[in-house]
Amino acid sequence: MSETRRLPPGFLWGAATSSFQIEGATREDGRGESIWDRLCQQPGAIADGSDGSSACDHYHRWPEDLGLMRELGLDAYRFSVAWPRVLPRGVGAVNEKGLDFYERLVDGLLEARLRPMLTLYHWDLPQALQDRGGWASRDIVGAFEEYTDVVTRRLGDRVKDWVTINEPWCVAVLGHVQGSHAPGLKDWKLGLRAAHHVLLAHGRGVPVVRQNSPGARAGIVLILSPSFPASDSEADRAAARAWDGEINRWYLDPLYGRGYPADKQAEYAAAGHAQDFVQPGDLAAISTPTDFLGVNYYSRSIVRAPVPDAQNQPRLIPEPPASSLTDMGWEVFPEGLSATLRYVHREYRPPLLFVTENGAAYGMEPGPDGRVHDEPRRAYLEGHLSACLDAVDAGVPLAGYFAWSLLDNFEWAFGYRMRFGLVHVDFATQRRTIKDSARWLSRVLRTHELPQGDR
Image 1 (tube, rainbow, N blue to C red):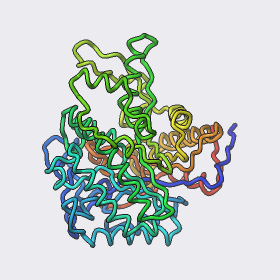
Image 2 (tube, rainbow, N blue to C red; image 1 turned 45 degrees about the vertical axis):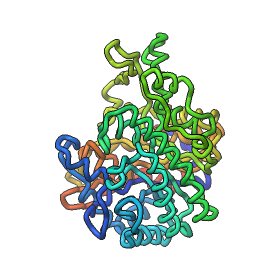
Image 3 (cartoon, one colour; image 1 turned 60 degrees about the vertical axis):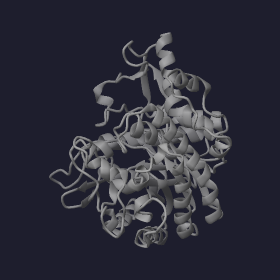
């Protein structure tokens, strides 16, 4: 027997993408090189040896993709602008053809009654800026302000939801410490500098958005993951606290006026990573009030204390059974989403919250009937939408949910091997096929009812 829950009135339902993952056309109409174009040229950097030069060809097929959103009954679309498509050198001369593309997209969305949520930076930094130090250089902050000014001047009269930066932790740690993301560096000192400059760029960018887009909402998007100790031992609890400090509190605390967490500052200082790059006024700028916080959630973290030779870094461990893992190896744990939303609301009190990314990679292909039967993704969506309703019932000011992703796409270092899309993409032909999970979601959005336990 199933029960049904009503969706909140006025809630914003959408899907999300990012420019490098879907646009393609990396050498067309004056677009400059990005750090991801450069990383894709490095042997072994991308699991399947691919690149983003074609991706989903959204640059040419955006009207078709807009039609898919309308068919699914979405309210909104979260997308990003490619910085090198607008400013090929990162600063200076504007590429009008690049801006024209985003203007056509925004106008098309509005005509279709889809609310645009525009992300200014989703990782495709112009290579020209990386050549001058990238996010590890303080000069990047002024460059981001200039870029923000260019985009918001053109689109600020129509776009009323702006995200400055997507997932600072990924920019800093995956890109500058682990090296799995562009620019592919492995240096903790550079990672901490990059994290600070990303947050500072956000803080300096918000007033520019407000100046050029009166009445708009401005915020930032963080990837958050609740941290669980692998056991009740004191060592594992300490490791879980350390991981929480790295991925969650290092970004939440300064954004909400608390400065960087003292326990992590001490840890980094002990490792020889002094924060000599923090200047007077920086923390005040970073904590510039915002209108919302975007939360990207995929799974929780289960953490075990490090072994002696592991350079004192907590280790994430796959505890759950294989049956509960997505193709990415991430545990399906919807309870973590509701817990995260309640925690952020309780501790930091952002005026509004959005789930700006949430989704699962499952590699189902079209069957003999032409349909993509992806029941695991449907169940994933059901569980996480229910978690959102749990948070709303608990008083969290959650204003919307964006599924990741609208389309199967170029999934960064995994290439085209991981499929997160509501819509299947045949990358050889660019044919789009709406998956069963998306059709289920469409029925939920049209009826405003979430059935549970109904298979």
